[in-house]
Length: 145
Image (cartoon, rainbow, N blue to C red; front, top):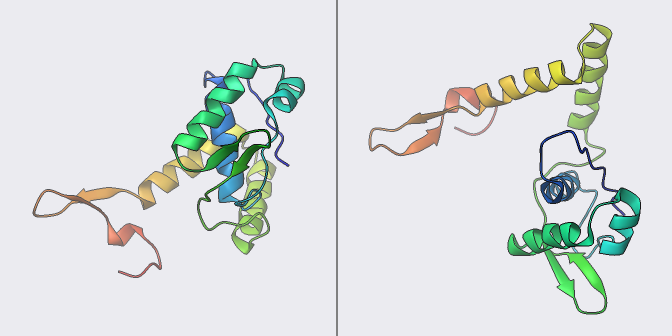
């Protein structure tokens, strides 16, 4: 079961942190369709947030088709995201990269900035002749072009 961690200094609304952490767990395969999310009461006890905040997050997940509430039973994962896996080879490579970056003196914010910069560069968009936007094939690595 997922355990939410709330960072009150992040500037991100608490309900959005719950939504984002749930989506991350879905992307990593830590949550799958049919899995039960913690009850609002369990989240409140673990994080000391207001129950309405948890319910707002769960409603947002329902609106996005990722969860569904079942009366008297709880909230369950309905959809999934991404193709990542918590134990994939890519994750292992990223963990090794993170270890090297820490050894070279980078902190969490430095690594996040570097990763975000490279990700944005690789997923940069350009405009086609008809004015629509498409991903630049030169920035897609080994994907089919």
